[in-house]
Image (cartoon, rainbow, N blue to C red):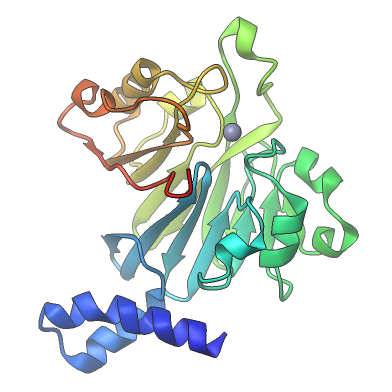
Length: 258
Ligand SMILES: [Zn+2]
């Protein structure tokens, strides 16, 4: 663990040093994040977005590393900073995997889950898990978190993600609000969101949104930055052109492992 953290700290310190910051400041900043990825400046330190694969991602901020929908086996996370909390959007296997959770949710860290996920957790993880229903608000290691409904709205698709079962999450890091949409179409609740800084938007058929649906949703609630994710097998190259100039579309590497 010590060696792993030290390596990550060294790597992430390099670009900061390159910008001519005092060494002590740069090092302190790097210790806070200790996670490589896309960075966003908040009012209190850098927020780091680290895509793992498909729907799995890490959010690093100060001493927090939030694992979102970790699946794929513990080895996939072995070189990454340990989780300080885990959130799970719903029970489908590309979002929820008990062996992976058992590997990453160690040390009594808190888990935020849906009822359906909770019911499938082993007792050792249930102890640290909190169920959030659609619309619930709470705190996760001192960070504000809210559960936004995630569901299909097209009549013949509601079987994939029925209303009430799945959550998206809003998590606030200092002055920045992150929205991880989960598996959903453009629900009224999504379209009514305001002041979102970073939004993770799922794209694939038939389970979530088409590229056009995603663009329409993004153009409606206008996050400052939109990250398409959950698009395995889908060509999303047309998305950026469909999204207005007010929103920056950021493409990350979600499928490095195929
Ligand atoms: Zn999914």
